[in-house]
Amino acid sequence: MTDGTKRVCLGAIAGAFGVRGAVRIKTFTAEPRDVAAYGPVSDESGGRTLALTVERTGPDHVIARIGGVADRDSAEKLKGTRLYVERRAMPDPDEANEYYAADLIGAVAEDRDGHPFGTVSAVHDFGAGNVLEIERPDGESILLPFTRTVVPGVDIGGGRIVVDPPAGLLESPERRPARRHAARRRAKAAQAREHA
Image (cartoon, rainbow, N blue to C red; front, side, top):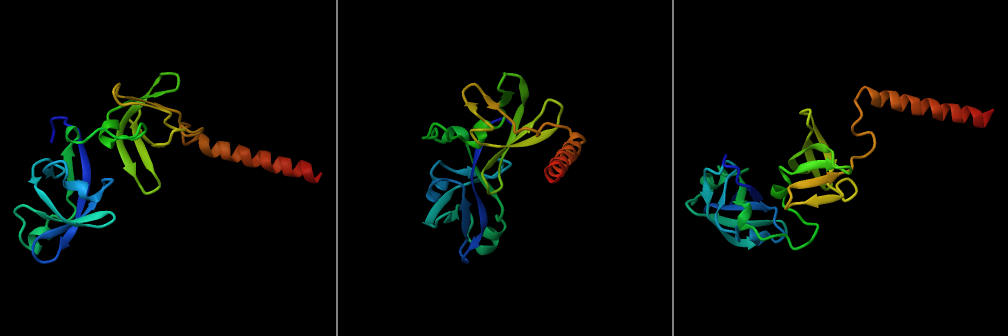
């Protein structure tokens, strides 16, 4: 899908379930059954549309049937397929500090003084909370934890976020070891003065 339409990933097919074409879907929705609540889903490319019928639910997954998939082999071929809907099909978040990743991607990042910092290029979840990937004006990408401390301002309507990166994050890699060595020297000097 190259038309710039924002999409939200609702889940991913984890594999076949049984022999009659059902699939197990790992859901990324608050309620697992909602993976099928917003109409047909599409694959990552947007080239294939899938109609889901949920048969049963678990704490973070559903067992579903997909129109046109009638056997285990066909279902197994879909393993790993991520399932998307267009952002406009989704309701607005209920909470004031809740956001869809699709709403954050493309947002302009500024520092607290309003200076350009970069653009949000991705939102990752490695298990310890969301992390924003920000492409800097020089082309490098950095990762920032998506916390209120590091990202104190989010304006979805204005397409911007305010960031306050942790100290030392933007230092060049060459400076970081020198700073650590200087800190070690100061600590050793302090220990020497205590023992003198």
